[in-house]
Image 1 (tube, rainbow over the protein chains, first blue to last red):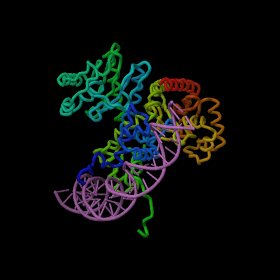
Image 2: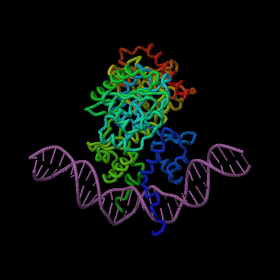
Image 3: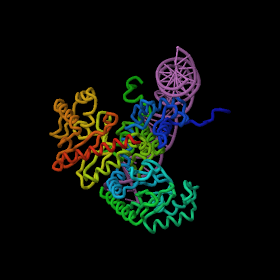
Image 4: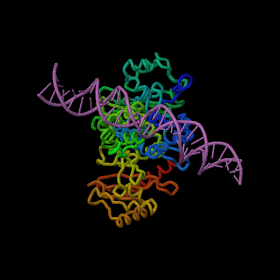
Length: 253
Length: 253
DNA sequence: TCTGAAACTTCCATCCCATGAAACTTTAGT
DNA sequence: ACTAAAGTTTCATGGGATGGAAGTTTCAGA
């Protein structure tokens, strides 16, 4: 009781640990060995082993012949019934497909999630330039086209809260001055679309527009293009049409 | 102690229960109240409450203002890193988009999962006819275009095992006679594509082709069309091109 | 507005099951 | 063959899960 006996780390609950194990899987770690999982979660091997085993039995994880664990089809199946998939993605996909065919560019769809842009879907072809964004990935709001749109249509309070935190600056062109960003966001609201130029990745820019529903911005669609193909007028009108079409599809359901 | 005390249901492990809770979410139940979850899992309210609460805290579930729980974004995010999404879907999507634009029909992509066709993705527009298949959904192998392809390219042993079980017959046209199915599957292997006519849904048919990798059929692409638009020749060649394109994309990664 | 029943939440004494160190087995590299 | 690392099993222990019951909130209907 007196000296040791501290809750030094772990009066933990099993379920929380299991969720931590699953959370180890991210864009950079889509396949992990038991040892790696134990290290990442800081769990004792035997405990980790048991948890992972149960998850595997349930189909939440699957073990490959390379002894690495991956996210299982059961978990994936369940996730498909998230509103994000079932409503938004499903409704938007045909329009995104058309957009992709029309522009031949990188097309992305994102929502606001925990103060970041969560990419719900993206369409990337050989024709388009490589990007960091991936479906299921998070990127900052102030350095991406879709992010700026999502932020611009938030309440003033939420915007100030976002600006109050330290803002990452992935490129020299990233705008991180609160005042400059405020002006930028006002511009977005005025125009109804956002533009970024090398604020996330060197050599590329993006344009995005909001998807509105009941006066609220529920998501954003955007394209990412090589800087010298950033034909604002054409892209904005194409995107606006697409956003309207997705919004209609969302309501029509 | 004496009369009851049977292990009547529950020397259960917490984690298994939690996975059962999550598994309650399916195409027909994308939003569930606590009570409904407790009923479906047959868990005591208090226990269910605790589990659901922990899952919510972890972002695996989210509670709406309607007091209903839905699959949370955290879980969805993790699922996006499943090989199914990260490799297959990501690689195939641009091609599916093109296919959708070219044909204007219902396009589906499926893999084999636990003896059923698991729909990895689908593209449905207003132009195309309504279907049962949905991303994340399972359908029988012998009544769907993609399913027949997936089954046809399995080992003889696996096929026989499949045929040995009682086969559902959703429409009068569904083929459930083992012998008839064997002939049908041989035909699929010979032609390199499958056709169904009203075997799953009245009034519609489908065509599907395999996506091959290292001599194995890893997935199938197909279209579902109104019976009188089932233009075999044109669709088969379009689909074959698409399958080749997806296979190339898979290798090129 | 009031009332009651159903849905949800909290409590807590009991006890079962998760825990993790240690011993053992398998795998893969030399 | 040998060995170090990775994975698996074991088991005594106690702390966390359990679920009945009591308390609280919600909401439909009078």
